[in-house]
Amino acid sequence: MTKKTSTRWNDIELEAAVDAYLGMLQKERVSEPFNKAEINRNLREGALSARGKSSVEMRMHNLSSIFIAMGLRRVEGYVPRDNAGTNIRSKIQAILESKGVSTSTSYVASTDIKSPNQKTEESSTDFLSPPPPGNKYPKSVTSTTTTYERDLKVRDWVLKNAKGKCEGCGQDAPFLLTDGAPCLEVHHVRRLADNGSDRTTNAVALCPNCHRRCHLSADGKMFTASLYERLNRLIIEDPDVNK
Image 1 (cartoon, helix red, strand yellow):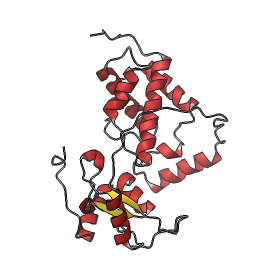
Image 2: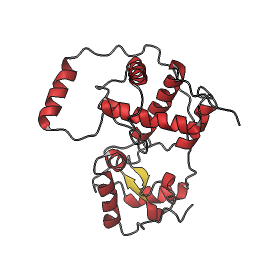
Image 3: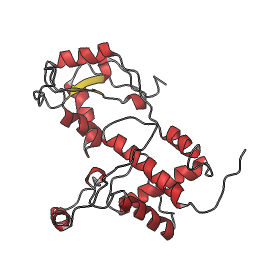
Image 4: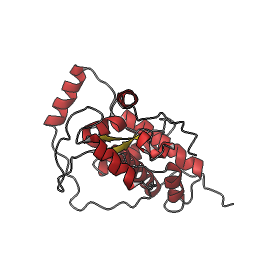
């Protein structure tokens, strides 16, 4: 077995970890599944070849701590661990700022609840600050994700059964797609990544707003639970059954 180095992380390694973390955060934002273990392995096969699995894992927990400290949203599952040195934290923050990620970055903004006064003060500050320069030539980031094969018959049945109405809020689809179909999205109540099944008893047709609510809102779990009460066809699944 190759012995892993115990030296401090260099800038290239830190940037690779940050890129991977931002990639996971973006996938969470759009409800795209991914495999943390696979991302860890890919990093160790590339820029982080000198690091062990636990070292890469700990760095992700460190990043969560830094993101929370900056008032940003973190990746689910990586509990913040504040054991990174001051020098490393400063380097990571500099890397984030170079990528246009700061405390005012909207897509990673923290969902922590703040008082109205706090929100007003922060909004005023953001409004008065100059716009970030951005990137004229954004670089591409290659990542590996895990996807699941889905039964098109299940999808079609769920969408047709909804009759153009969101099964979450009961409202009409917000608009029609280019093919004339209502804009509804099939959502698996127990996620496929959590061993949920791809059956009509675990799938609902939601408007984009309710779909995001299931994945991203502060009351996501409560709203998801309400779907079982609203729709008789849904069956609460045991996450261990489909392993």
